Image (cartoon, rainbow, N blue to C red; front, top):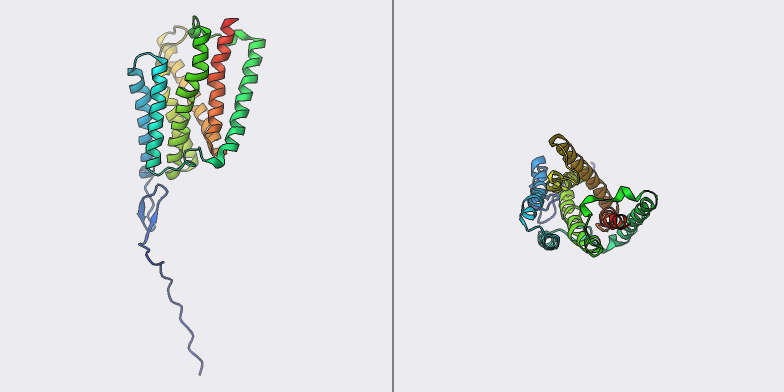
Length: 261
């Protein structure tokens, strides 16, 4: 007579288990049930829409004062970051966690260095390429204020914290990285819609105005992809801030130098 063999007992869920799983955005879903594509896409799209209302409705309604608009952008993104933190995004989600500072500063500093060398070379070889009729008549002090303060704070810092900080940080919680990069890049391009449809430095016929506007959108969307890739590559918002500063702030200072000579 052989001894009875022990029978396997089915594994039991840990005590306190409710049979549900927590999704990437922190919500509870039934076991085995994944959030729908539209449910995952809705929060990033809603956040992007809020940014577009801000840039294409709120800011154009303000008086034409660069300092006032810079202050509104800084105040708006400060409120946005505060709300994002209250809703559960971490400093790492926002791209400003301490562990990412080193990589962000290295990549961002390199981007600024390349921009300085590039604009410097153009100033030496062909300064006329940097002349911008829209800057004609601006005093050196006004250009310095714009290039060293208003653009770095009111444009670069505000936009990077909004797009590569809050929007990217929220998007990657519910979307694949490529989709998150696409959402933030398209939103970044449409953020410049009012500028793209505005008057150009040189008067253009209607057909060319639309061509020019589409070109501006294409360039800004491509730029948004590059900035988003830097954010993803380094985990830090400091890297895209460096690239953005290099193209915008360094560019306007170089244009001012070209006009002065």
